[in-house]
Image 1 (cartoon, rainbow, N blue to C red):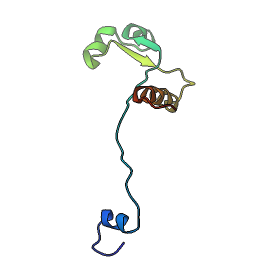
Image 2: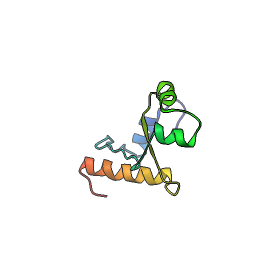
Image 3: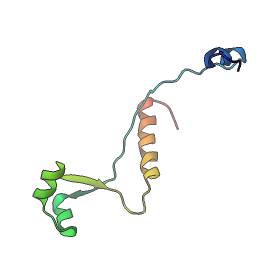
Image 4: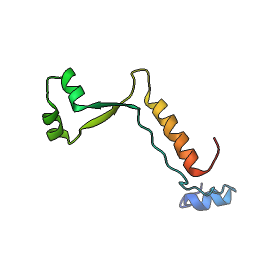
Length: 88
């Protein structure tokens, strides 16, 4: 790239073009196991009321210890592909 030349004109001069890019599908995934504040209060010295007041949460989803965040991302990606109309 020459001094003073911007990236767009440089790409054009060497024959590099940008492919059209866009978001055509989104997806999400949450683990199936759900824990309530009452469940948490049996594990931690607190109460459903305290947790609800401080966090505003009543329930949360919990992944099994053997599940990695990348596993959750793969499932969300599958949903996004289905929503896009593309095949994996």
